[in-house]
Image (cartoon, rainbow, N blue to C red; front, side, top):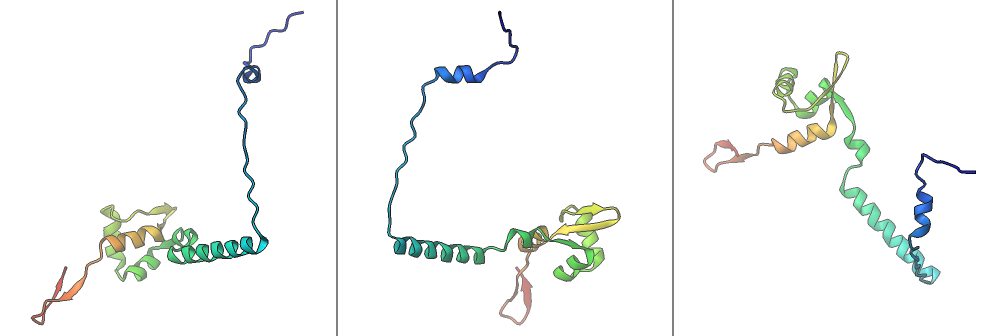
Length: 125
């Protein structure tokens, strides 16, 4: 009796390849040292989380009114920025939404600093 198979059988090829040995190293430490190391890692994690806002905060969506309040601009200025392609947005039906991360990025990149020129007049840098 002869069996014909149209599906390649990788398991047969696997049998002819040499097997690799996995070596695992076991390290024993005292429980108190492990707990101290664990506490240090948790403190580092807490500090790192404090440095960057969480992704859920940055993934927050804002509508036109929220963006106008956040940037202290009129709705017409926001429309102009949107039409020029300076601020990315998403539209659901007639409602327009902006990612908070995109708005904050735009503000950071286009921030103008007001300085006193020393002669009593203010200037923009």
